[in-house]
Image (cartoon, rainbow, N blue to C red; front, side):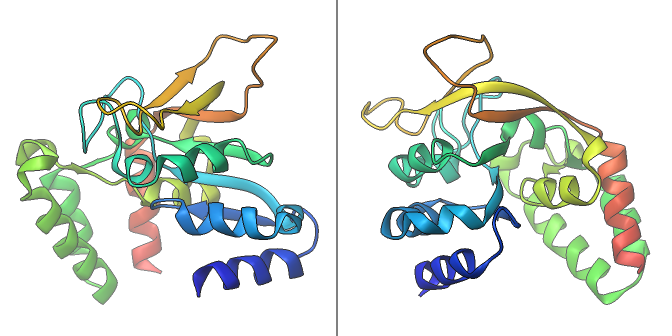
Amino acid sequence: HAVDFIVRTLCDAAPESISLVITGPMTNVATALSREPRCLKGIKDLIIMGGARREGGNITASAEYNIYADPHAAQAVFNAGPRVWAFGLDATHQVRATPARTAAISAIGSPIARAAAQLIEFSNALPANGPRAQGSPLHDPCPIVWLLEPDLFEFLPCHVDVETESRLTLGHTAVEFRARADRAQNVRWAVHAESEGVFSLISRVFQA
């Protein structure tokens, strides 16, 4: 089971040696941390794709899907203790696979580049991702790109809580940049992405 793997891997790791990337609902990670708190010692950073502030939600008016799917797990992970870097829709919506960018990836010609271009074309055709001309956002690649080239993203410290009760706003990420004595700034929230740099790095990887 995934939870067993997470617990075993983190407990066996050297202290603060693992940057744990989460690009989906956080159920398995939250369960692992609850089942075996000792595994926290292996985590250097928690790097999350999820949440929204300025952009609003993509599954409801106020919630991003990965948080909405299990808001209690998200609340637990955001406040677990290790340093958190969050890539919400505010940043990922700046990284859009326009038709020109998609064509450039396809033109690389490698099998992985062609497969990626086909996936992007499928995503671009989905009405939920907005007008085809603007391209769909590349959500999940953003945390991986940041690990490879951190200067492509800008962050601000903040406090994040997740709404776990309201019927209307379930899964909403309440992001507060204002420093307060009664609330730790538990998250670094991505506010800007250098989209050209992101696609340049992706293209270089596909050419390797």
